[in-house]
Length: 473
Image (cartoon, rainbow, N blue to C red; front, side):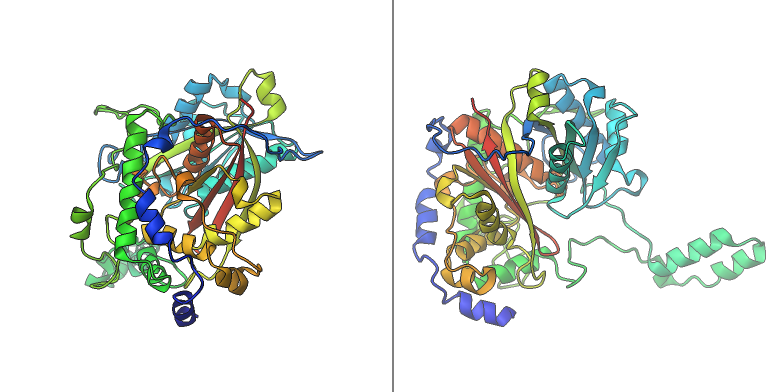
């Protein structure tokens, strides 16, 4: 299938001017940051007999490069900080929360249910249940939509959701041979049994099992998958570097303009107070062009500069039924509307979640691409984003793989990730989904839009897409 996709997609009817349009528009970003209020004349997506679920507020710790200021902490420390930031910003009574759901990917074994440990640390009522979910890069998306389901079904009125990832200290295991020996040693009852087991130790037993961001089913790293996907869709190194530069440039302008208002201050014990993301680093095409291939060497096009980086960070959102929010005096930011989860071949289409999810959620909600004012897509790799753009803009791909008669169309770049994305802001695996939704809501408030599409790919060939509707201002 890989060879068929690679051969055919290069010749499929993709808009040949896409790359030129991206180049021409990607850096003209100043106007994106201005409040251009548009009249809201579109219908609401409210459904009869279904509770409206609203996003009241969303916050996140500063997203930091792994191995920097957070490196002596633990995941629940960041999660607790996100919870406390949410409580401070909303003045929410801690015992008013019915349920807490948190996402994470690489679990710290000491706090396997990080939702519960962080909630207790943040001072939530011990009577408030909490559970942790994992769904790769869309773990906090799953946390949010689980909360949506609890509220829409009438089980809860108030849910806190979020996610955390801590790449500065991931678990490193002993080899399986060593683990079996140690477990047997722990059960040994006599000194003779212990000495016999110790005598079986060999030098190779001591080799650790290092973690890898790789697919279990394919044994392929996501970077390799991104490189192959870029090659299949004919995405050039130049296009990828231009997109990455766009992401960092827009993020820096948004940061300087104070638009990243979801970021809360976090006092790291024994260190300074962290107030901003530290991975936003606008470079130059010349500097980026000097980097060598990071995965498929020596001729790959995916580099450290056009990939998202290993990140520490946590996020949290307050979700409520509309009635409850208004009764408590809150002014919601947005409605969380229709959402879908998709999955496809993890070998050849690992990172195409937005291509599959976007047309599906639009059809479910009765909207078209023309109705959408804001797009917030997860940027795992620049090549992944551009490949999704080309797939979404291809009739052939729609007919061959999605079962549609015609393409859904690529998002207009003037509406796309205008405050930066995961390439520049960072990507704590378990936390990014909440950042996407909160940013979409904040952008609609600033820009005057009514509908947003949030979409993301994830390991395992998974994907998610959601419609976010601005709350009437």
